[in-house]
Length: 167
Image (cartoon, rainbow, N blue to C red; front, top):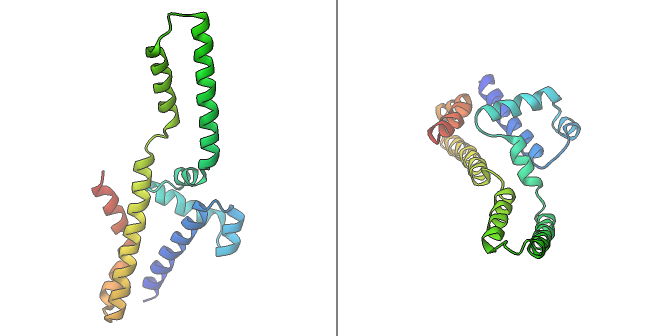
């Protein structure tokens, strides 16, 4: 019985560490709030990364400030047009085809790689954890300890299996 509660508590702890980490909280804050060490945070972070849940990449996505990005994009596009106009004055043979090349390069630089894939993985992880928790809750309501024990003991394997089937 103790190992079942230990596994369940470990899953809850891992999810709490993940949540605070993705909110951009410092290691010190997470350690103080949850009463864990930095090595515990790193252990959970590295385990999640091996399972396809890259917290560092997700943290970067969460930190993106869309207002600053919009301002940077407007500045960049303005500079791009100014640069093209200056080139056009000095090199009249430049054409809209050349501008299209610049524009294509801009959009390639602008779009982060695998953003949709990362968001899908994050959503899939959250959905998997929510499903496991809901099944465990229903099993507890029905006094089905065997299901609760199974989910507690095998939650990590379930999450790994879900991510492996998606590859």
